[in-house]
Length: 318
Image (cartoon, rainbow, N blue to C red; front, side, top):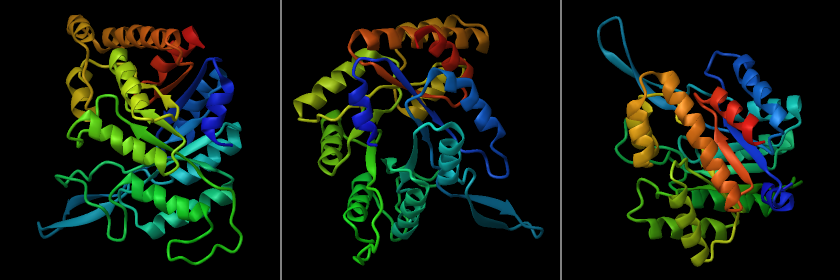
C-alpha cells in the first residue's frame, strides 16, 4: 500500500511515525527492538529505517604508515526493515540513497525489498562523505535523488538498468522524498530548493518528509510556498525533541536549521542535560499541538538520542 494513500485515508485522525537507526556493525537487534517495544503502543503508521553509506578511515600500520580503509558502520538496512515488518507487523520504509551506492547496488536493493514484500521507500541523495568538501557520487552511481527516482521508475516499468526486461515484475515501489523547510544546505535559496521538490513530485514521489525544525511558522510558510508552486503531495512534519545542552550549537551545524530565540534563551537557562531534556519535551509537545490545530494530523519523529523524550510526548498527545 502506498503510504501517501494511507496518510490521506486516515484524514483527521491523529497519527505518528518514527525513524530509527540500524544497529552498529557487530551489534545485534536487542537495543533497536527495545526502542520499538517502547513506542509500538502508540500504533505507529510506519517506521523509517535510515541507510548509512560507507566511509573511509585511516589506520596506522606497524611501520607507522597510514592505510585508508573503507568501512560501513551501520549495514543491514534492508534486513532490519524485513525483521521489523516480520516481528511487529508495522509498515516499514527503508531509506534508499545515492551516497556510496552504484546503480547495480541499488538494483539489488530493490530486488531484495521485493522478495521481502516491502514496497515503500524513502529516496534520498544522502550526505557527502566526511572527507569530501562536496557530494561526490560513486562511480556508476547517482549524483541526485531525481536520478535515483528515475532508476526506480524504470524498475517499476519492468526494466533493469541496462534495459533488459524483468521477466516477472513484482509490486511497484512507492517513493517518498525529503524536503527542507529552511532549505537544503546546498540550495542557493528556498525557491530553487522547492523547484527540486517539484521535480521529484513530477517524477512520481508521492509524499515528502521534512528535515527537523523547531519553528512551526517556517514550516507553514514553506508549505504555503510549495502549494503556490503546484506541489500537491502530502508534506509530513518531522520533529526531534531537544535533549542536550550541546545541541544548542550542534543542531544548527548538523541539521542546518535555526533554533528560535525563545528556545535558545530557555536552553541557556538550563543547568543540566536533564533540564534541557525537560525543556525539549515541553517545546516539542507545544509544537505538535500547534500542528494539530493547523490541520496536520500526522507527525513524524526522529528518535536518535531522544527515545524517552518521544515516548513522553506521545503519551501526552496520542
